[in-house]
Image (cartoon, rainbow, N blue to C red):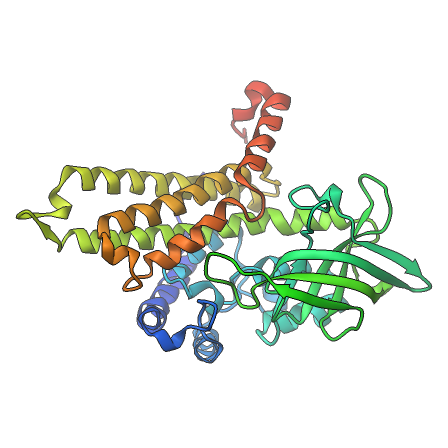
Length: 400
């Protein structure tokens, strides 16, 4: 495995870093730049998005055929990590969840007509989107086989009834991907549908409050009571909803990790800057062995995360599914992000707990990482399943 990046990717990384440094980071200290939910305000966002487009660093994850940068997953890892040096970064480059994963699955599985109607407006930044899969108990969460929302065929349309919740971006989404049950077949019982926010037969019940800052559009509970969806808005074919979730969630978990590594590195950056200048009892914090150990352990944990992410990205780029690799990266990096924020706050003391830095923002945000796109325990169960099936081959090397 070669970790050398191409000159083109390094050029993209430098351009991203320059925009983050000069234009995005300064906004973090300006209260007026935030919206009511702790994210970047839409006015400030649109101005920055225009600059990202002009700089040629917009929607890099999509194929060039649909206006993207054509990056593979390994190149995305380099760029996404740089974008999320700022808490506002990914959304500026149209590489934040949930748009990121929604665009990639539409690009991979959509027909040409579906790409033109449903993907391109998202790729151009004209609309937002949401992926509606998770349901309240006793419906589906980490286990899609438990999904209870149903789509019954009536003529050339499907009529949807049921509930979804914690749908990221729901309050501001225009284009939705909905996973609903079309039969009781254990493997082919789910279907993915596309619908527009203006269609009747559904509503947002509430925007669910959370402990951390929110993505634009929050996390919503939705109710479906007669939403009609025509057959041409089925994504990837009838009964292929499980396939859609696999294509959608695997890479999305990995791109989460790419971004979280950027935030983890930012925590170290803030902690080091403070430790190098703060004196206590006549000694710089940076000269205390306890602080050196804390930062050294954190640096090692972040680098392990980068290696796990790169191996998973390499496996996907070569045509594999990287299920084990993505699960390992997801568990490790989610925990590293929480540790990085916690350690940086501890080193900064009261300053870290205040809103004078973004550490408390990152800390509140970090707790969700061990839950979203599969809780730690679910991914560890998946890893054990692979271990039980593969035994010693769990750790095999790929031979050329």
